[in-house]
Picture 1 (cartoon, helix red, strand yellow):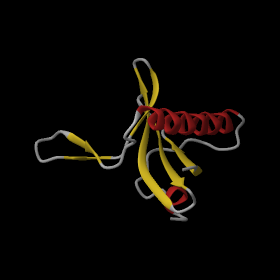
Picture 2 (cartoon, one colour):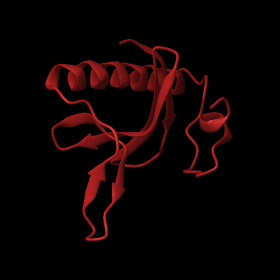
Picture 3 (cartoon, helix red, strand yellow):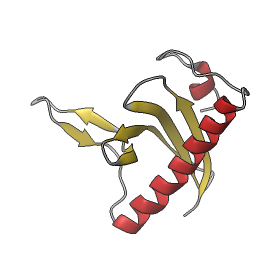
Picture 4 (spheres, helix red, strand yellow):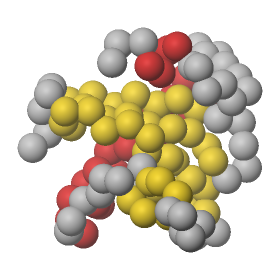
Length: 107
């Protein structure tokens, strides 16, 4: 399995730093991954939904640690690339927008 595309949408927030979508083997997309700035560093939260009791359940997630680490390191590298583009003035970070057309455009 290969991650063939990673899309990052940056957010201007203290903890939620961005959203990611990944394409696996040019044929399967996973959206709704979150790049979070936690107490011990940056990590990737899997897409989830709220249960009736208020807790959250992952919708999709790796089933072993090596896959999680591989996926997370790839997404964080792409996130850092996007931050570099902001620092160079190539892009700007806008306010949160649920209808972000750049994020959804080609899916």
